[in-house]
Image (cartoon, rainbow, N blue to C red; front, side, top):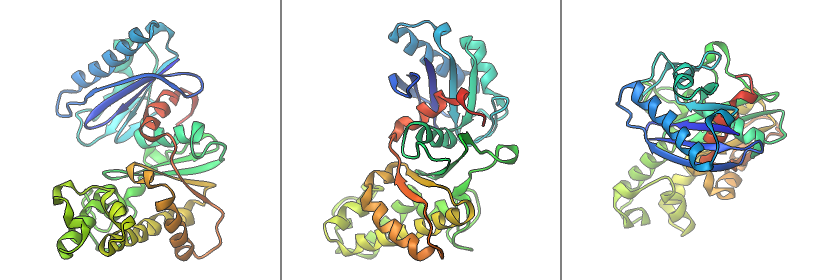
Length: 311
């Protein structure tokens, strides 16, 4: 049995995972992002202990604990090198967790963990070379090469959200302009939808308060025939195709997995995306473009299985 922790800025989610990648029990607690690191680590340890007790096993029966954390992670040593929103920079997370739990602990980047879970048990299972693109508040990425997570020099690979797709374009949270995630993240889609609503007062987009617009809104109203909403969907898919097209040209994997909340649109997203990619990419590629299968559980499962890979 393994324990996996998906550490986020809002919540800490954890689960016990069996040899087949099945979560047998899970729970979460608020992250309390601004707290001292020791309090956050103690909460992670206590959450795993709670799950073990509820499932009826001793902590010594856990093979390992895996933590998927945002930021730049030295996965060889379990150290969080850089992180936004949580007070864990330069903390040896693995060492501190081992002190509190007595269980060998591994730490990896959260997007890499999700990609690894999809590789083992999800949409890219069986693929030799895959890339996962997670469309959330930002855009995360994970690269799997020959059953291993590719992290590059100093563990910095996979930051695909900061590919430039529009030089001099919208300002990104990283400070640069024109980043992929400024346009194709869920946040980018929501901002695009809100601007379209303001510019088109007769659109169905204005049938709900502007602060209730989310990543599904434009897709939902486009299905009802709303012209302005369809324009948002088309523009969004165009930006998504530019960024994914660049990944395809550079990496040419067997499979590109689309994750995050927007991926729940399924073929409603993927059919026009594949069509746009055919126009965007100047060769007849064979890469499959598929939706993630594991949903929000991918982070827990991938973290739990960190001992099975060399990051």
